[in-house]
Length: 434
Image (spheres, rainbow, N blue to C red):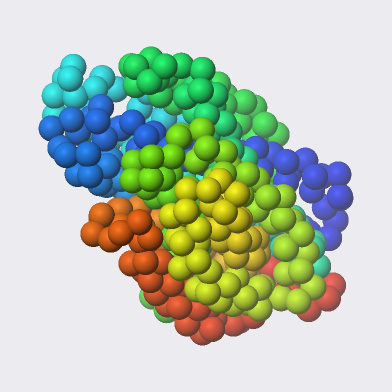
């Protein structure tokens, strides 16, 4: 039997680096669509709509990616639980990369009419399908190799990947939007970040080509024939609780990174450059803090940090929208920063917490489905609901703050019902459901 205690520190560094790079590339693909949806997709693909309706329609295609993610977690989770975690990483990266490049090639409504938004919808669905498999494969491969006493730390590196992907996606967009005219950016500049996904996908496949299979998977003697059926039968309550608990993280993240970007540029008249800079700075700090918070998770447990982050989010959402409404860069940055720190306090330990909640034979499916259902509840709806709520309010969109606070309180209740899973000292193997 393979003992994870035999995995050397250098091997863990290579594994964590490859997982981080892979999640960064896949989330780059996912985030670059969100940025484009906030900035240009409405008028280019829904020109017959009013500005508000066009933004809502663009965010609706953005939300389709979240709806597809649980389906991707079922598809790739089945592969991960039946065939291994490693094949999931390759297949999901190929699917997400190819569909992202294709988005950059879709003609606008002016060229092909209603076929343009329909193609966007299909490709966004495929993006979400691939990303739904990515998280489970990358996180499990790292978590199941890691020594128990440092599992939260090592598992936090794939969680840094979304930060890198977000900064990369928005950094490319920022450079293009500042170096091109409005007409050039709308004509072809917005497509460049999508095309760049092809190069990144090739780099990711090369990085992942030498990864070893998870030891926990190799130790399973009796693989689940239909993992989803087993998860639904034996772990349905756990899946619903984890989905509800994670909804706040998605809601906070996409309220800051997607809705705020659209609200700041369209309603407040703030330049794209200023909004992107404020948001990116807050996300960079959040990413840098993630491994530090994960160390606390190894010392004090996963659940206490999740409860703390969730409570902080509930308290901060109304102040955040108030600071956003000032239009002052430093105040907006402060609002985003505290929100991102609350987010990191929860999500830094989630990559260790979710795998520990599920038994190994259905872990890839169970953890990924719970994680991605949370995305549907919190990520898919937040930009749409927040945009609609803000339209009927004054300069300070208090309704958006109340909506986000409500999600945080709901998630807090779900976290309160979940058990602690931090392994006892020197326990090497990932525990089954406790």
